[in-house]
Amino acid sequence: MASATLRYRNPVDVRFGVGSLALLPEVLRGRPAVVITFPEAEATGLLPTVRSLLGAQLQGVITDIEPNPGVAWVEARYDDFWDRYAGTVVVAIGGGSTIDSAKVLLTRPPSGTFAETLVAMRAGQTPAAVQALPLISIPTTAGTGSEVTPWATLWDRTAATPTKLSLHTEALWSEVALVDPALTLTLPDTVTRVSALDALSHSLEAIWNRNANPVSDALAVEAACTMIASLPRLLADPRNLALRTEVSRASLLAGLAFSNTKTALAHAISYPLTLRHGVPHGIACSFTLPLVWSMAQGVSPGRDAVLAEIFGSQESNPTGALRSFLEVVGVDCSFTAYGVSPAETAEILRTAAGGARGQNFINTQL
Image 1 (cartoon, rainbow, N blue to C red):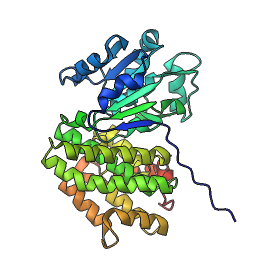
Image 2 (cartoon, helix red, strand yellow; image 1 turned 180 degrees about the vertical axis):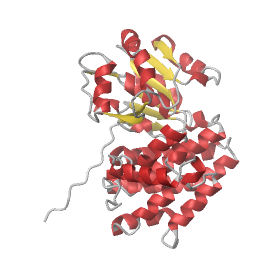
Image 3 (cartoon, helix red, strand yellow; image 1 turned 90 degrees about the vertical axis):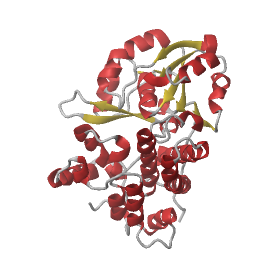
């Protein structure tokens, strides 16, 4: 009997290393560009540097990105964006919110209106796209992996039941990702921690995942091991460029891993925590990791063997080791710490297990 065919695909041209921001003119290849970035990019000196690099190629700048971008933000800007920048390359410089905002803007459905895309997203469908602008992603945080994934998150806070929407289409792959660890040097400790914990979640979620494959496993294990080894030291020494490089590398590898598997139960649990209780995403998807790991244990010998690589086969209590790590970096692993009652916890777990991301989890007997 023939063995199952395994597939790993990621078409993003990744350039990783300190100083890789300077490659932006090279990868643009003379094309006009619109830069989408975060409000502080001017004050930090990042935007002036980009202006200097691009010169006359720069057609415009959008800096009013909001954290966890919402439907209303896109609706207010979509038509003007396409009126001004239909012939440009989109250069997204920032964290996950910036790159996701750029992704939602850069595709155009047959009607030319964002309303058509939104209807499809709310129905859980892939929106039609007749036009999509090229994307160059330059992350300034080490965590989301959005620079190497084909989807974007949008928060639908105006719906009757506020929810998280996902836009997933081939058009959202970045053409190029420039991952320059030096851009993370000025991050506040809180952003460093939350972003890195999101990446750790991506790596583990890619392992206890029904879509895992040997390539995603190798990437995810290396990402998790590197993050666990490096994050506590980075939080103690935030200006250490070598440690910034290691954490950025871990984030990139985690992104490459879950770009093929998608996330699983821990992320499904996180969404209502962010929407209802304002828990930052990186905390919301990481504080349950020991719990979810315990649910994954014993389900699949193959998955157990891969997970054992994180702390080594000699570790008899890997979920305890993970909990200890999270406590060291300041994460409380109890639902009550985030204002969630036992009754709501049970409801969140039940709903998460039945959702699309929950269905990626290897344990279907929850």
